[in-house]
Image (tube, rainbow, N blue to C red; front, top):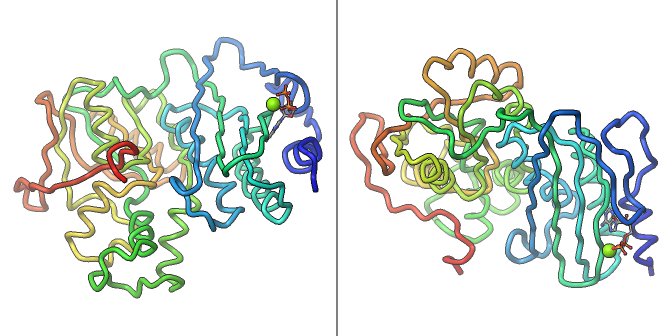
Length: 331
Ligand code: ADP
Ligand code: MG
């Protein structure tokens, strides 16, 4: 059986890399030491993933390692912050190497892709629970805050929405008989949708290139309507969305209109960015999308009048009952 310290040194400690200037001291001491670039602000965010709540008990360990860092990097992306480092607090039922090895590989592969170093954490026995805190940096005044949207702004979204929610529907056996495109557990299309659920892509490069171009931003974890709602509430504005121009995921695009509308608007687990920018910035937004190799779609506009208005393809009002994900109001 691995001891706590063997486990940390084998799976969560890597040789110090002198080329990472901002990490003065990593794993192994009482604290890590970070040296942010002079004059920059630290952006800090924490996200916890709990077995049975955020992921199924038999979730693939490599994908889980990826996802628990991805959701945290997504918060840095939504702020327009550059990732620097992260800590990992882990409660594990047992020190199983056949789980730890792929978990650590999935986690550290994404960390390396973003030059985001694991600098410390805590390890304890208990029901599986993974808590990551990320540290990033951004220039003062450049962070993409939720309270910065202004009436007249365009609303944009990155990538596509809803495939992760579609995969969840298959796991839960919801919508039986209503799904097109051969969506059975294990089918090719199901696996494509499930990849969006299990291994989301944090839009870090887009967030960085949108600094100075976008005004407000948020990452979509609980569904577009709920998350855009946070921007509206914090900015004291309303919005109109062109529901039928929302970019549906590849597999969701093959479903009926009702499912497409519900899962693009209120799917969850998308980890795309929703952001606002002045209409005068349209070309700059498209250039940022190109620079960061991330598709973006204009989906609506910010209104001075409070509330959210949903329009169909003919600009007629839509009245949909949507529920966004709220951990304390759903079972
Ligand atoms: P302390 O007793 O001060 O809490 P620990 O014995 O928990 O220290 O941890 C020893 C070192 O290992 C610390 O530098 C801590 O940051 C690091 N560490 C512990 N768990 C993890 C983990 N899961 N991932 C990365 N580093 C870890
Ligand atoms: Mg400790």
